[in-house]
Each structure stands twice: as structure tokens, then as C-alpha cells.
Length: 596
Image (cartoon, rainbow, N blue to C red; front, top):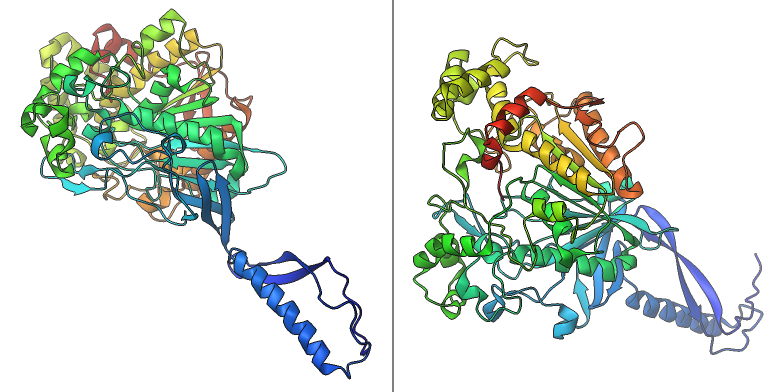
């Protein structure tokens, strides 16, 4: 073995092999070492010299490492400062990133304020390795529900497979559901993960936005002095602020700001539809997926402000100053959950009571929305013309049916309930409904068939048939392609009742498609069958292809030429339940469709 130690020129670049335990791989760390010595003795007799050189090299390396993020950690600069995130599961995650000034104190019931413009950016390195607070809410939606979350909640999170991809990656921005009243963008099984980002090679963003009274209270006393001369829809303004953040910053996370897809489920789907109609969101996204959103969306600001006087009366306040001084719990408890405008919307999963409607949460405020969505499409102006997917599930209401004993119904129970509920609309109507939703027809499962048929009937009336009409109006108005799907898949086993699903769902329930996309089916079903996994993969394949290409694969025709039925496999049919849908439309039942 040679005893020679060679000269170390100044500026030599060294490459150290460092074991990264979290990545389970060896990576190179580069640094420049400037030697204070011009030459070193050729013989190891000069042991002191060798030791000095070694110590200096070690000191230089340790100084470098001290400035370098530890294994599993990554740093990204945004327009508001540096973030420290984490590498895990094949992707980077940056969680709990502020995207607006906290809407607290005088900023309660005000449009979101940009952090940079307000001079409210952080100093130093922001820890983005954990989620922050969910937005203020109660669960369940009752006066005595448990108060959860905080007002300082305007945060988003980013998951990306690469910070420096060869080509910028498509971006999917998730907007969570929850009636516009509850949940968050960081729910396990119902939000992005590192695994999803790595597997699909897509950048994901998920956000929290103001909910319930904090996000959607329309009142004249809040409009007075408003910079927008409006009230309500603050949660939608938060979503728009988050999309602006994406446009300004997502390139730093490997994302393509020119290929942004917004997608949401339930009231998140309603949010997607709102953003398509809002001039404030112009150019902030390029594709849209609306999963089980609303159909009824026409309440004026003035009517909503009048309805919400019930809330104002319960607070004991007369002006905005008083309202902004209320405790979080006082605000939530003053909401008329069960009394009109009935924000809890309990009857959205049942056949309607004639003349009884749910009050609006989202409104046509003149700022976020200039006019009702259908009117906007008819005028052919002001909306965002992007490729659009409209989806529902066949038994939407099976996630929370209105009767606790529905799983034990006989066919006699089924016929009695339908006749009793629809009799106010005329005997002829209830007879037609029982004929079209025939209890003697074959049932694809061996149990709970009355439940399946009843929840199909309510879902057709409240969601599926009205959304067919929505998709038709979209196809008439948009130059971009429109696609329509209906989930008809029955999972291999009953979903477990939990905080997620208040009822042990058995069929194609509300949430089935979104849980499948995020890999949350295992959470509610337990062990997945091959068919369950195939359904999950199919949903993911279609959504990600749409996000990447701005269209569905060739086998999926545009609407209205076909509707995709997503079962164990996808099939494409000219229409779904045309005669059933005509019954509800011709008898004006679409006015009882889902709102909010």
C-alpha cells in the first residue's frame, strides 16, 4: 500500500457518500474544500501533518453538514420564505403552509389577505413537516356538537414526487367536502399522500378554507364597510387565494402552473362548480372534476341575508363589531342547524316534504358569483371554459340514510314509506315511482335490497338526475369537453360505521369514489378484495389521465353521447335511467335537489 499523500489543489470538489436511512439509499453530498497547505509531505513520517490535514478536512465536512438539512428533510423557497418539509414514502411533503393572513379579530368575515402584500411573511425556516389546525367547526352539526378547530386555519399542503423533475408535473388541487360546514384538507383516507404522489407522478395540493358561519355567513351588517360590497362566500375566496398561491409557487415544488386540475367531492364539488363560474378564478386552473356536488344554486344575497337574521338574533349582536368579538363556540352555537334556514340539511338524504326546502349557505353574492351558474352559462359569458368531469354515485344517500332501521326493512316497509312520503305530491306520482323502482326487480346483492332501492330513488331525485341536467347544460355552454360518470360499484363488503361513515354503508355510497382515489377504502372496508383494488385503480387511472392530458382516454366518449358506469370495469352507455329521471324532472323535483 502506497504511503504517498498527494497534493490537494485549492477548489477541489469532494463527493462524500452519506447513508440516508429514510430514503434507504446512498446519496452524494458535494462540497468544496480549500486547503491551507500548498503541499503535503510525500511520506507518512510526517504524522502530525497528516493529522492536521485530516482534521481540517473533517472540520470542513462537519461545517457543511451543519448547514445541510438532515436526511429525510427538504427545503423549498416560496414567495413568503423558506419551508422545511420531509421526504417519506417516495415523495416530498410540505404541510401546514400559510397561504393567507389569519382571518382573526378584525379580519373575521373579511376577504383573505395576501401574506406578502400584508407584510406578514415568516422569518427564518418555517417547519412544514406537520399539519396545522383544522378550521373552526362542530361535529355533529348540532348546537351541542363538539367544537373543534381554530379560525387561524388558512393553510395548505403539498405532496410532490420530485422537486426538480425533467419536465414540470401536473398539479391536482383537492377541495374537501363536508356540507361547507366541517372536515378539512388533511383527513386520513380523504386527502393526498406521499404514496399517491409517488405512484401517479403528480403534484397534489390540499387546502383548508373557512367553513360554516365563519366561511359563509351572509348578513347586511357584514356587508356594510366591506371592500367587496358583499357578504358570505368567504370560504370560496379562501379557495381562490390558495389557487393564486399555487400559481405563484408550485413551480418550486416541481409542478406545472399551466396544468392545474381542481377536484372536490360533495361540497368540495360545489366549490369546483363555483370556481368554474367565478371571474375571480379566471386562469387559475385548467381542468375541473366535480364529484357529487350540488345542483340548486340560485339564492340571492338579499334573500340569504334575510334568512340569516335567525343567526344574528341568536347571537344577541346588532353590529359587526359585536359579531367579531364573539367566541368561536358562541358563533357555532348560534347557527340555526335545525331551524330554517336549517344549515344541518338533515332532509337531503330523504324523500322531500312538499314545500319544505333547505336554506342557502353558498349564495350569488355579486362578487365571487355575478349571477346564478345556469344563468351564467346561458349568457355565454364570465365563466371558466375548461374540461369538466361531473360524477355521482348510484346510492349517494346510503352513507347516511334517514331511517335507522332501513337495513331491516321488508318490501312492505319500502312501499309504505314511499307511498306515505310522496302522497302529498299525488297518488299517481307515488304509483309511478313504485313502478319505476320496482321491488320485484332483480337485486345485485342478496341482502338489504329494500334499502338499496330506496337510497337509489332518493339519490336519483336529489343528485344523479339533476347532475345529468347540470352536465347537459355544461356541454351546451362549454367548448371544452365534458364527461359524466356514475359509480355503480358495490364494494366486496359493508363499510364500517365510523366518524367517517355514520352508517354501515353497503352499496355505491357518497364518498366511494373519493375514498377510492385516495386509497381510503381499506380504512372503511378492512381487507380489500381484488375487485375493490381494481375499482380503486380504475378511478385513479381515469382521474390522473384527465389531469395530465385535459381529456379522458379514447374509450371514454364525451357527454352527452355517453355516460360512464364505473363498476368492476368501466362501461359506456347512451344514458342512465332516462325514464326515472324524466319522472322527477317533469314533476319539478329538481328544486328539491342537493344544495350547498
